[in-house]
Image (cartoon, rainbow, N blue to C red; front, side, top):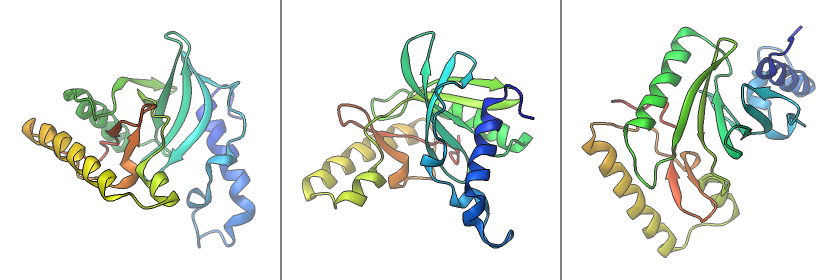
Length: 193
């Protein structure tokens, strides 16, 4: 029924896998019960020139997948919407514009905004070091780590505000780390320009 629509197929697979854990239909939305492991092997699925590898996260506004850019031979993150609506598509495009408006070493880089079978897809720098939320689950930050991160965030927020952009969603899950441990602010879905 999904044909070659890989994103739709991945969503249906996750919903079906979550069904036994839902309980009564209206008590808990199935989307809230989904875990990244539910999407097993996505390596055979592709979105344009991006080969899906795995689902790395989901929030109220979108789902994020690790993908391989087959044209440039690099990992990327693909952010898409769990439910496509004209308002959601507009917000994702606005997020792409906000991310692309400013260059800063502590902002995730947006590479493109694509449309795949009517579904908008944001192509962003992949940050393999996980999020601050992931790190805080392991242990609290030391005072030194906290101060360094605070300085970095203050600097990046100053750059955003100087460009008349307000992020409006600073939280541990929206701060991720590249392979060298450099923190980067991401997820501009609620930003105001």
